[in-house]
Length: 421
Ligand code: SAH
Image 1 (cartoon, helix red, strand yellow):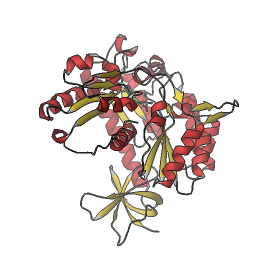
Image 2 (image 1 turned 45 degrees about the vertical axis):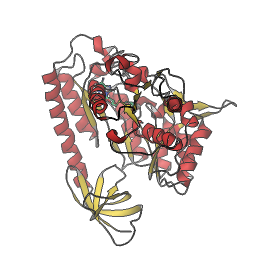
Image 3 (image 1 turned 90 degrees about the vertical axis):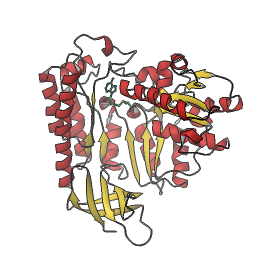
Image 4 (image 1 turned 30 degrees about the horizontal axis):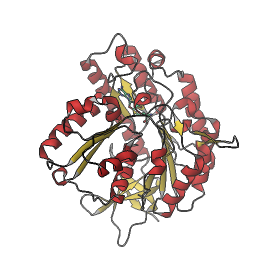
């Protein structure tokens, strides 16, 4: 979501006659688009601001947008006195006001809705993989998570506006669409006639555009994988056989305290239905280790579920207490050294599963999307349907954006292959 927000902010500044520089010392306006999901991300913002302010032009305008802006509020001005603006994730379309009046300190962290998506200039040229935000915010209120506070309660965009965005992307260079939302499969838009549109309707509409060859979505909440959406994996070939469906923990007790009120049977039921719909589907997860009160036994259950589902491409994090969340004040916070030890153990397990999956791909032919040359310029980097990196020798002439690649070798991090057609 932040990558996407960054594109739109850049397009907006471009429309105001600004050009991008990679050197903060050369910039007239410096914006940090920020993430507040873990304390480390927030800390990095303030250390970056400290560094940048020393090297910037004296009259350069500097501000933060996104979730740290919302989390810190006016305190951000106290911590960094020469900040010019602090804009929350739903107010960054207000940036032009700053450009018109650079002396003004702009502060807006209201959760005002999703008009930003339609008010800001659209991208003139779409990247090969184009993100389409369809909803923002989350109603689940997991006890560790700051997102309902920073991005607010769930709001879904108008169905027609989303389809128009897909159409524009298809016409301007996109080959793959990734629907985005903090709770993307909770997408629900009811039009003036009372008709309800879900994510499955968006997938069907996107699949109709010839230029669009691959479709995916992120991030999903497990129990919102409704049957209409699961069916899409059986009926829409363009929908990639890969799904991020975070379980967070394998322990029913921890899940309860996280306020993720599904049980493991329910979760595994969804996994089985997905595999029935699309036998070659692979699932990835996010994991949190060291949640308050997590015992060795709870943690073992997390390792167990990772082995059972054989998650690929997963993310694992040490629990980080966040302001405005219930878990931050729970008893039995886990010491840092235990969190680190569990993270190392889980990562080793996940890496092993990934290596085994990568090796199982050798000999198969996968349809892949070209991301461009590698650092040496002698190879091309492709992305498989499972988001693995696949390196191939650069052919003569222009590379095909989508092609079938036979996988010839694999290691933990990537694949090698040769282009078939
Ligand atoms: N559904 C959201 C989640 C984003 S956060 C979205 O896509 O925007 C991504 C992952 O960070 C979560 O799935 C969770 O595993 C992890 N996470 C969230 N809050 C956390 C915290 N307080 N400490 C550690 N990890 C956290």
